Length: 189
Image (tube, rainbow, N blue to C red; front, side, top):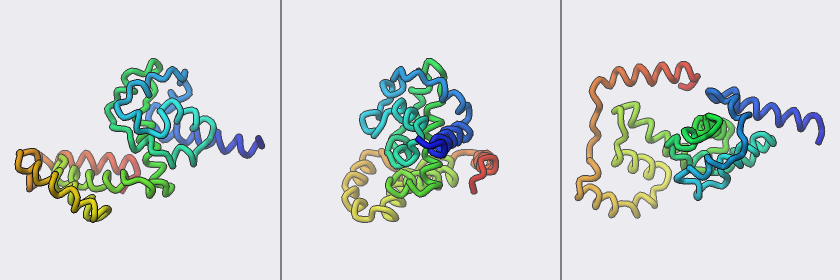
């Protein structure tokens, strides 16, 4: 392996660490597998978090960012809570999502579009609005799939599981101020 390749690998692991709060803890991974064993969605992932960490250290940027692993993370923080070395696994997954979107890998997944639709409603109402989320996401990204989901949506509505109109939290202005400040600090628009 050339010194340039080794330097590139080192640069990427350092970039992941730098973009993750307490990311330096990634270097403490002992490959115990507790993270993957704790994950409720682990079976859906291309690679377990432990395997992703190995790939990051090995400089396999393309392999990691084109995988579905970070998109399958349900952000339950169970892996992070159980990690014997307190590695911020879920936060690393968020870092990888941001990197994948920024570098154009997110186009192979529906997750960025779904996340954008979700954050639209959280920004506006302070909570998710399932009917709007499903409609907005499917009509803009998968119009044919929206037609197939109509029956399920109707049944959910009949059973009182889905509202037709969104509800706004109290003091939404305070939440919106927090979101604006977080985006300002994070450099997002």
